[in-house]
Length: 294
Image (cartoon, rainbow, N blue to C red; front, side, top):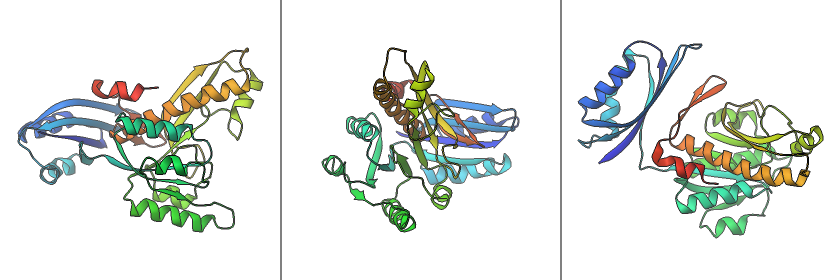
């Protein structure tokens, strides 16, 4: 039995849920999980439905038959086959904790993606990546040849058919052109609980201010540096007795977990862009354990 996910964004109006559920019933489909949200400020409606096709309808048939309803209700919609894994390119610099964490989750099946390449501006993790039978590309980045380097990166991303790019502590600023071209398809992990303590050494700043909480933020990359729509955040408590090195160590753990949860939400089509914010539907019970793995 085939299982699919339907995602819908449209103006809020009466009868949307009835139209979707009625259509799926007519097509011999059984709804497994459903989430919806009405944004009263913007007048937008968001819905994610996971369902099983008991009559083996394929995606083309479903899309064609649903298009009339979508047109009437002014929907942006997409059907996704849940057995297809999203193709992902990871970009990393010299901090490897997030990369290592993602590779481990991918290897044990906790993060069901297809890692098609790793791109770095350093050689530090070549052996690690190659030992996982993943293509590794080292592309040096300097001010003088940044445009050329990005063209090489985009060529790798496009040739690999990547649907998502993950910046796993990639310490380079992407150009506006690349951000716009890949809008909604680049996820970054920021080493602080935005919008506080920005910069190269946030944990030292946090230590000097005597904070009691540190955290991490995962967001979509936009042309506004570190200001993209937030997908996932988390925090960890600290005390006066801990050092800046303790903050860094604890921060690495929370960064890894936050990035993994953000990717998990994205690949399962649970994240909807809503202007400068996101709507993130909760994970279904069957996937929650793998998402929470530390």
